[in-house]
Image (cartoon, rainbow, N blue to C red; front, top):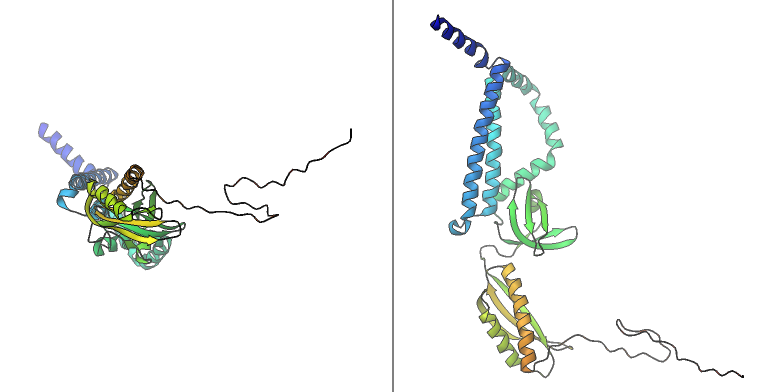
Length: 308
């Protein structure tokens, strides 16, 4: 009796649940395929996250790794769906019938998803040719003009660039294949930063240049002080230039702020005056125009006497 019950259960399972031709079997295989794809995608994502956490030690491209991780997760689900569809007889028959119209369908799908597919193919090109890496400083053209920032992420369709003021510029991958992009840190991570300070005519420019060089050398983010000299003499004053080498553009911005602030204090203590732009406006007789910031020119008050 027990043997017959077991045999009946096995027959029931093989005829219904384990048979991909039945609804129960199709759902079971779909669940198994989805679970397998989810597990593989989770492994890929976890491995990418662990690698990204050590990207500075491993010297890897974070943008390329992020793109490859996303692409691998998508491929895992696509392969799982293809295997599941091949196991289901009805879907296999439907797929064979659709091959007759694949040319027409491919044209329609290609036209409908032209932008999406173009961004995906361009992303693959960026992954292969590597015109830029994660963290590198790019200058791109936007509807508001040229913008600069570092590469934060490379997705399947878009590249995310973060600016100094924490804005995100979302650039379609296809644009990088059709426009000129300036990579300011390619092959060499260090950048040269120019810090300019104007002083008045007659001030000791040599001593001021020495002060700027000392401030730059003492800054913890500066790797090398290239030079400190007079770069230009204008109507408003003498322009001093100190050039330094540092790790990146973000560090260069911090160096510029710090050197300017410290130079202002040192120059004030040492009797070196900073130069400021100014303009003298000499009105002509009867001219009521004025320069920006000047008080309005009022007509003279006419004294009058009245008979009492």
